[in-house]
Length: 104
Image: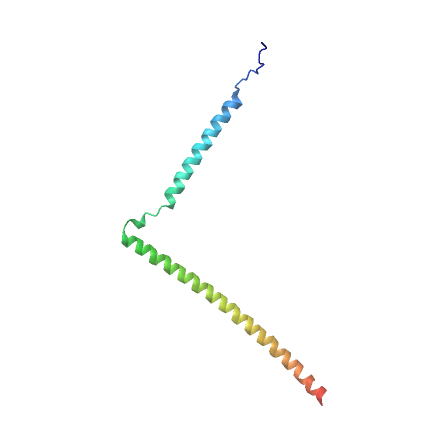
């Protein structure tokens, strides 16, 4: 029976370093994930009062953000209307005398 040819593998320093690098990266990823999960947990909601305070604060922040957005939107619309009226008024003043001259 024939022998199966096999290759002899030598574990050099590169192979060992890869394993160490991967282990280090996995450890760092685990630590980062753990720290991020701790940061996202809210400790202020341990009691109903804490929850109510957080909810009220978030609601007020939402209301002020929406009010600011509406104010900016209406200010922009007012500026557009004013600009249009000014330009339109100038055009009417320029066109009106020539219309009367043509009709006469």
